Length: 290
Image (cartoon, rainbow, N blue to C red; front, side, top):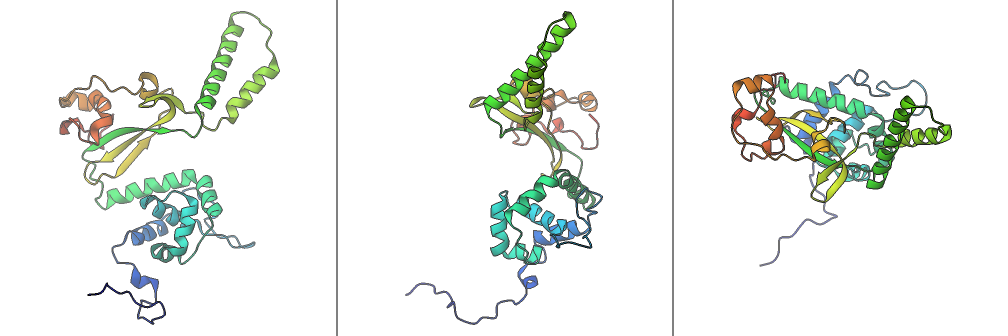
């Protein structure tokens, strides 16, 4: 018995002649396409939402947003990989009408429209809630540490400059002293040029590292992220206490605790999404104010 044989490369076939026949009716690409087409791109802050009357035609920001959302859902973050997928992925060929923007265009779109993409994400949450995918009855809160692009040395230098400027201000209030204006100007310039001013040092299994503490609230029904927040290093609990969650108990929150702000939920935040020892009563209704 031989092997399973494929078709010859020169054999003519009755392969579907249009892309529409290749994409199932319930495919996620159709959801992305319908969702983006209903958005008010100009209202969300996207540039060139309306085509210019003169000049070379550019890419429609709707097409680039569809590409970004598809890459997000498929865990494709690299602009070069997205460019490659546009040339070989049938789903993207259908979604973008066979357009294949280069990686520089994709990266520039993400850089210029960070706030617009965030606003589009908020519209997606509203849509999910309107069709019943977000129940809003119970939510789970979790925090994750994300290492910064800046090096430890860069963040330490920034912190040292901030302490230096604070000491100058305190000394100036106490007594008169001669300060070199050029040194102060240089310190301020370095602070303004730092790419990640909100990054702070946090404890991890590898010791202290510059990172962000990103907190997300997830609906318990379909595990959709309904809200997210990145505290500044002045507000982040992980920056002040090293991210320790010691002392958490497994008992459920009392009703008065849930109404007034559940402290146990804050301490359980790191384990709530993994279901380690949390009682269902520790969750908070999504519509309830903290």
